[in-house]
Image (tube, rainbow, N blue to C red):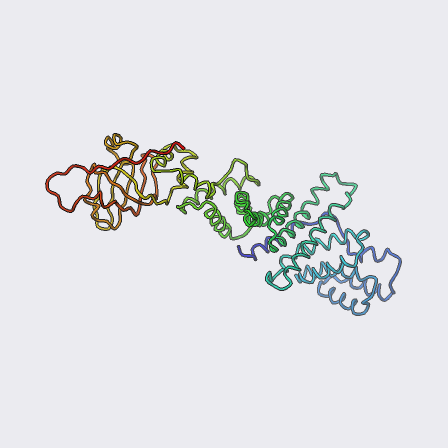
Length: 445
């Protein structure tokens, strides 16, 4: 996933998550209401800066004020005025610098609303300002961003409810800011490789903004990077992010998701991941949380099937259909079988490839009676296999590549016939079919 796509989405989230309270510039009311602790020239210069409407001009005015009155008691209000102007000018490091200054200089109780606005502004621009994840101060930046986001959540929690709002309205109005603070904390934790904390933060963000595709994507990444990985929930979160259009390049997330599912299952047939992905994408588009009934088999699940299977149990499971057939095929598709026993139904000779149609069954009587094949066997690099004839017994090794459910037919590739079963190059007269013992029956275990 390209980071610039994620940054763009994060900025959209921040832009859309407008705070429901109005925090005036501290200069707008507090400075004029308090008992004067500044000189008339200070106050006039301060008011002149307040009157500027052009962001660049206002920043220059504030710079001049700081140069002339470096110890002014109005300084915290000046710091707060820098924040929206630098935000407009897209000078995000300066937004963070002055937000931190205001938070450091202001009173936690008297200036709670202003501090909350500063923390909100800081969090909304942090990610786009974090340009060098490998820089020497990266960890320090990330830890400060996380601390600021958590402080913002604490202040939100302590914010008094306005008299003209119901408790539910008040809670709903806080949700965009809660989502922003949590997503910022999660981003910092993800970069710091604290994956469990990152997952918790992104879940909290999504609880307050369920359509946040970026947080859903990052939740999926964090869950898959946890120890041990929370694979199924991680897959679901990534699929959900695709449906929420977390990025303008959804194929990048799809490729990542497909790779993760393939590694989780370790099926021998990579193409089997695609139908599972399609099903997952359809389901996740309609539900934010993974249902308890939804699952994808792990490599350990498939190994159990492989260890307890032989060709007869495979055929029985596949013919049975349903979930059992799906699981069995995931486990054995692409698997090499060392010696499969059957009776030749017909032979298509060739130089590079000989095609055998073969029937296998549980007993000699069943195999003797068979007139149609249940296996298609492509023998490569062994042209002498063309000498096999109808009703010959044959033993071969090969790779299971495909099966047709109806009429049932297993397809084998890269097969090799046991040389002992191939008739001599020349034989006089009609010969009797070569016989082999049927395969062992499946274990009752």
